[in-house]
Figure 1 (cartoon, rainbow, N blue to C red):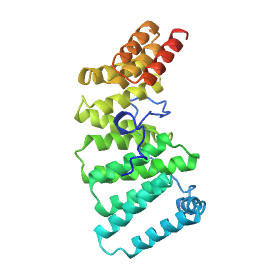
Figure 2 (cartoon, rainbow, N blue to C red):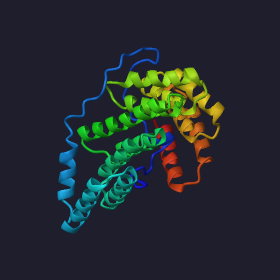
Figure 3 (cartoon, helix red, strand yellow):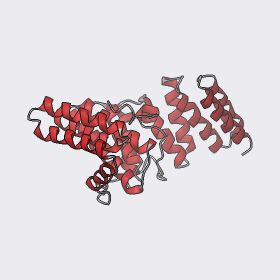
Figure 4 (tube, one colour):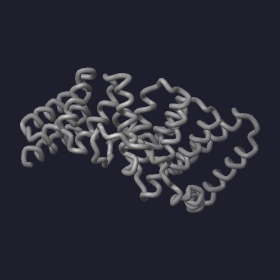
Length: 275
């Protein structure tokens, strides 16, 4: 279900981190609350997308919506929603499909279902970018899903990391995300994804020594972590160690088999040498 939505979702389900924070790890920040996504009218968006379909395809969706409205039991509702998801995916209405997935998560109220649904929203956020208001809507929907997952399973650190990333992607709430990730490593200092994201944040905020320490921790636990080696190259460039940066990138080439990926690494090496 929703396989076409979660395309190319890279490290730990979220793809490339694009946070823009500039604060220090040690700085504490108060929660600024829920991001305002009121500028994006989802119902209007959905209506516009559906109206643009060919009549026969629009009729199919409308009939499935009617079947959902008539469904009386939870299994019937889930079945109707799964049909709507499949049809929406087939019509390339990815956000619409993911909102139906959230309806299933609401019905089941299961931590893992909430987590997977949040992951679908983040897949949209990274892989199918839209206007700023639409992007903020996707981010907020993902956050709501991960909040629900963490409330149902308070001991699951992976849920907390993914929740933290939704804040780190929000310029106004970056430090709240950092604090969540720091809370994770307080519980498990070897948590790979938490250290990896904190390492990325260190690079973005210019704290290369801290980023290096985080990434060294990742590699001590997961020596084959390709993302950590790539980030280490960025760290070494930030520290002025160009040759060491190239060494990390050359190591990456020995760890992957995808020719296109290796070509991208070669281009990055060339760019690094000439910088």
